[in-house]
Amino acid sequence: EYQFGISRITADGLTAGTVLLAFDVTEQAAAEHSRREFTANVSHELKTPLQSIMGSAELLENGLVKQEDVPQFVGVIRTEAARLVTLVEDIIHLSQLDEGTAPEKEQVNLLELADSAVSALRERAEERHIGLSVSGENLMVDGVRNFLYEMFYNLIDNAIKYNIDGGKVEVTVLTGDTAATVSVKDTGIGIPPEYQARVFERFFRVDKSRSKASGGTGLGLSIVKHIAQYHHAEIKLHSGNGRGTIIEILFAIGEM
Ligand code: ADP
Image (cartoon, rainbow, N blue to C red; front, side, top):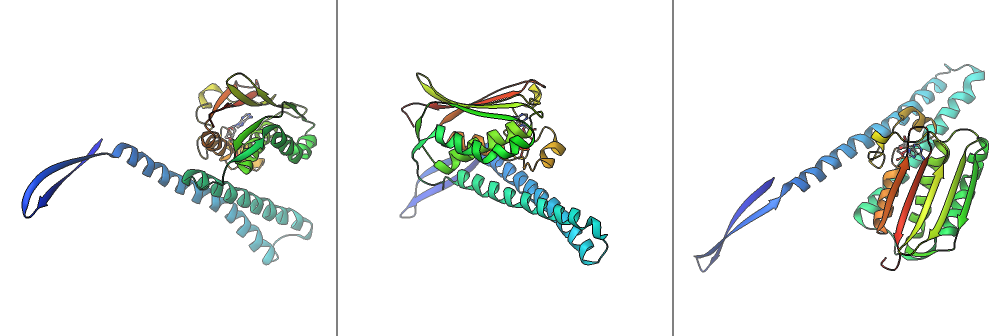
């Protein structure tokens, strides 16, 4: 789809030439559409927790909650507020990545970042008796430390959330000939083939209730995708219904 514009260039009142301008508006229109969709999604995602916070607060304020139920309502307020914090952080990170205003790159050790993300999530895994392991080599890449940490955090967080109780999560960092591969492997519920291409879309969830119950925003993997792109890395997904999931991020060696 093209948009045309005609301008006449005049010099001293004489027509010096006619220029035909053609813009490809397809891409522009698609970007505009996805921006609108994103805003609509964000509004919805913000409204839902805010409404439960308001509802619980009003009931408490009006003394409509039995004494023994008070902790439950306070709990709802805290959980929903925590979800809002995560959501706002996710949105800020996405917009930094979109606008390319992310911090400067530096030499970072991927194995070290994998280790810190695993430590941060260990308690959550232990609550569900999920084994969490990291292995591999010390590997330096030119990258943004916070974002690469967030990449590991989101991938490992998902590998725990969508796992079975007593399952396993293995994180590895390996150097090959042409690429360094980070992989996060789980023994969880898997992603059905028909949804595999869509899980990297903003706000897409296979099972909305499961994602929400575990504090998911539906933005985690789209952030991972943007972080990978920012570092010129490629993402590979291997999964099947009920067969666990492996997500690999391939960093090209030497050209970052
Ligand atoms: P969420 O906040 O819902 O976890 P993500 O963007 O991180 O959002 O993931 C999108 C969807 O992809 C999830 O809702 C879930 O359905 C699916 N998913 C992501 N990681 C895994 C995984 N390791 N195993 C199974 N399903 C997954």
